[in-house]
Amino acid sequence: MKYLRTTIPAVIGLMAGMQLAHAQGGPISAYYSVGTAIDSSSHQQIDTFGTGNPFTTPKLGGLTSDIGGLFMFSKHLGASADLSWRDASAAYAGLNYRPFFYNFDAVYEPLKTKHIVPELRAGLGGVNLSYSYNSTACDQFVGCSSSNQPVESSHHFQVDMQAAARIYFTSHLFVRPAVEAHYVNNFFQFGSNWVPQYSMGIGYSFGSAE
Image 1 (cartoon, one colour):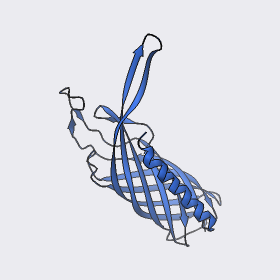
Image 2 (spheres, one colour; image 1 turned 90 degrees about the vertical axis):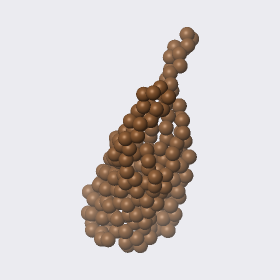
Image 3 (cartoon, rainbow, N blue to C red; image 1 turned 120 degrees about the horizontal axis):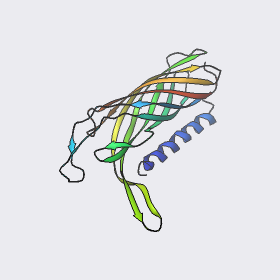
Image 4 (cartoon, helix red, strand yellow; image 1 turned 60 degrees about the vertical axis):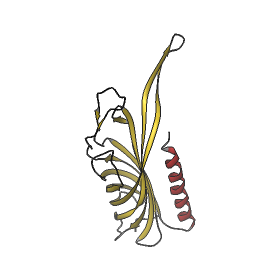
């Protein structure tokens, strides 16, 4: 899919940064989360297939997955990378779509205890919306088969802000509730440039919480 063109470099950057931090002895944390990112409908009427029966654009929602990691340069300052995507494609004006968010943030940890470490983040990234449609082909030899054909994608610059906390239940394992706000430039496909995201994750820290 076309969104892999942005996914793969972002993943490589995340892995390279974490490997560098580990080589330099900095604390590293990695996590996987589930949640949702929401936005209102733009209420556009789009006649995608020229039939005279336009579609109304949908709201943004649904279950999202999120992977990320952070490494600390000092006791309070660090850097992070985060990737999130809608788990399944959804309908958009007669097509299917799937959003993908990625960002690279500065991290500030104002305090550390044995069991909880708050995180404040801000940074830059992008959003990719990939579009596709379902098609069915039939013949008398193999019967009918369905496929999902990519159509095009739309890319947007974003500014990201996040508040989260790593809550440790062992010296290394933690749960991670997070609230995030994406400001997506010219996000005309939906009703607002502001996209809040809520998630709950589980992760592992290479190093103690303190």
